[in-house]
Length: 142
Image 1: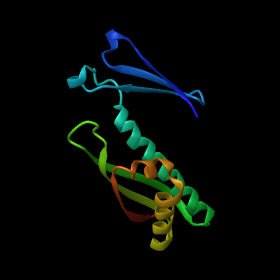
Image 2: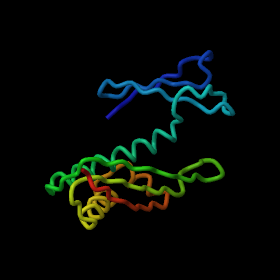
Image 3: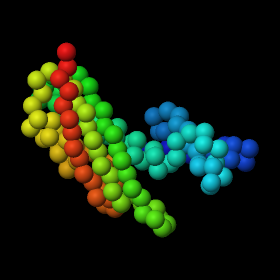
Image 4: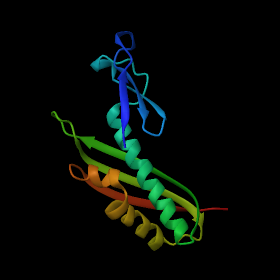
């Protein structure tokens, strides 16, 4: 896996463009207090986005493989960072909202646990510095 990150120049403030190894483009930017112009997500926000995408992917895939009728999944991540450099994540809470038909709480809990303990490389890696917690709600689909 690889990517290239390029600073967009002084006129951009602290804006960067990344190209992933699979050929996709992602913009990132800095906060105004750090010389940025608030044009794109911060790099640390991108880490949270990656962890959220990774675990949501896992949960949907696990439920589908178990032949559960999942129709939606979103996860909200709330994180805290250390006060001093390096300002690593120290706490991350994942709140899942999973919708489907007759989803069993134990199946959803199992999918989230498998993702967090075994499959989601991003959240497992972030768990080396952060205390990670999860909860969920199930929404019955029409």
